[in-house]
Image (cartoon, rainbow, N blue to C red; front, side):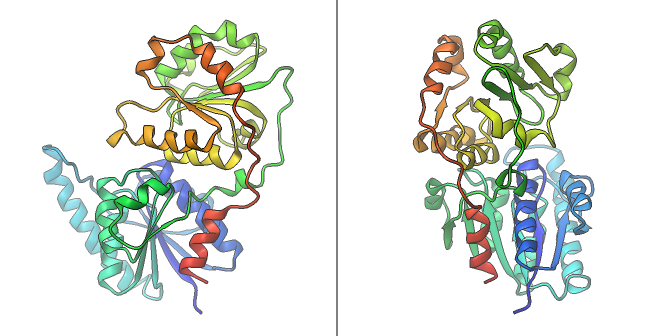
Length: 340
């Protein structure tokens, strides 16, 4: 059977990381014809270049649920993206018969064009709730894969709970960090979180009595903090992240879908602080999936002003130890469903 697949997705790191986790796995299974449709300047383009994946740019616009003058401009970008996608599938990507979307508005034109031209279209939804772009794509998809069991009821198509594809840098961790005390890793995501930064700063002395702290504060906040012997500060962590996660005794984090699923995969004791303004309160629902798994606590932003956070630290340290999963089940499930 010929194995050729076009990936599409972007607009955030979550969409792109999942796509390239799958690409890495598919290549390991002998899939050689892989291309990518994405935006002109998104993170997905940078990742495609780094991973030597053929990349094709299309115009993209955001479809907003509220009135904005930008909607009038973006609708034309969106329509032009559909035209570009048709052109790519008729010319340069004519031999490709599978389109796999990992979500985001840039993937909507490719999914629509692919389905109209008779290609098999698949979608992976990372979060616990479908966003507008993925609701549209799901109407054109033959199958939808989801990370969480609770999402299945929201999908009006054949739906498979695959879990979240995990990047190989986390599935094959061998490096670790030696510290004189247990390692606490704190992150507010790639851009940092002022709320979490302030929280850690207010409990810093008490925390340092128990831990060595590695704190990803975000690039824009980096100048506000300084390193000390047991308090390491980072703007953004890339290559060191697997070793840090492998070594951490406790993690404090936001609750994006990728982060939650990676912590569940690694079995790490985690305190999730969901972003309150996240769309459809999706971070809270993501975090609750880990909570039900038995190795995470969920603390809302509103709770932070009413509790002694050190009590939550002590509670989290008593959570059950969970062994890291032995294989990347999500990648295998998806591969078997669409290519085996």
